[in-house]
Length: 237
Image 1 (cartoon, one colour):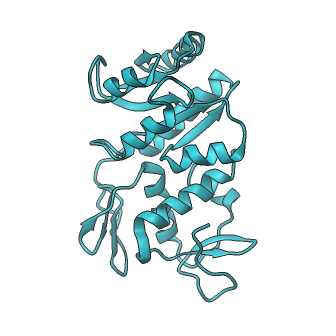
Image 2: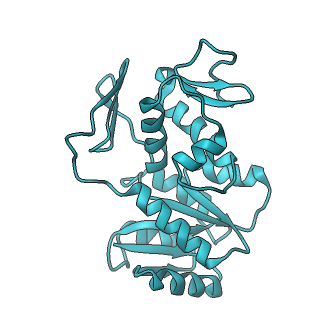
């Protein structure tokens, strides 16, 4: 398995590669979107890409376009971290809505990026089946935590690792209200980060579950699964 680092700045690629290799990672570098797409397809890479670090502004396809292509391709659950020089919240949200698991704004600490890579990989790792991890059900929704599978009325639903973790957490804690800060800590394992990360993942999870979702917005407090008895109602915002 290898990490793909795609950025048109060779200095950025070199620094990121050195820090990731210190952690024992195998790294493949590309300078544009076309080469990155080939590596993700298994062309020119020494091994299967287990995570991609994509520059938003690299030559076509850019990081956001490539992220969207991955999410609709043969390996839609490939973890993706976006590198962006765009600091506006709208730009960061655009990247998250494209399917990114995380993003880092330039200039950044390469050590922080290495830590984010480790965090995303840890969350996306598929564990061996564990008998004690019971199947979760809520109406037509069935979730197998061990196999990381989700079904609605027997039809499979494809979720990213973060979306899956978020769904499992909510299903295991029905009726409980969690703030965005709390979800960032409990689901992402971060004690810092942009709260819009949680907002966008909630929006994406609602969209994928469709009318079957029971994620309620509790205004001024956060989110809850199946808690329509309190002030607030489900929202796509």
